[in-house]
Length: 113
Length: 116
Image (cartoon, rainbow over all chains, first blue to last red; front, side, top):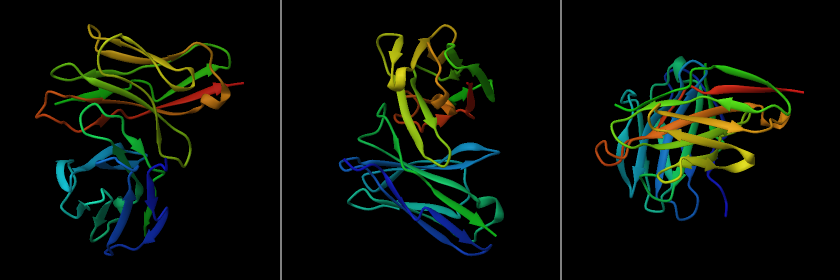
């Protein structure tokens, strides 16, 4: 079974631009979560989607948004990029919610100049 | 609110020696606990989890972890370290009693360096 895939793998943007990242979960997985990883802050939870609905949200500004489609694929969008948004963005999928194991994709490394 | 702490930023161990990576947690009820490993420029890989039952959990690559409710700890262990175990290790917790399905909270990570 194919793992979690994320596209693109690398992105370079400039301040003020917006960016959309994509995540395809493992087939059959219905829950998708997004995380931001930086050297200083570690892994920070962004949001969780299940059945096309946002179920949980982390402490990020409204510039960060996401959505999930009927096939469970998910996208996250960051508008008006700031230098501090440079990070590795990780997507994780799980079969259901609760105690299910999350399986992570390789991440999208975003560099904001 | 749930939280998890990994008190050591880095752990150094000689190859062949036992290793321990520490994790303590705080939740309102009985936790779901996880360990993940991250190799450079890769996503996180699942190692093991504790949901309920036996306090000693065995996982991938010879790792195991012991759930200790009284000490609120979930330390990761391996009897004999390999150089290939060198990576960044994350402990994570999910509180099943907080609003139904609370988010997963990750620790800050512990860098394990196995010295040949």
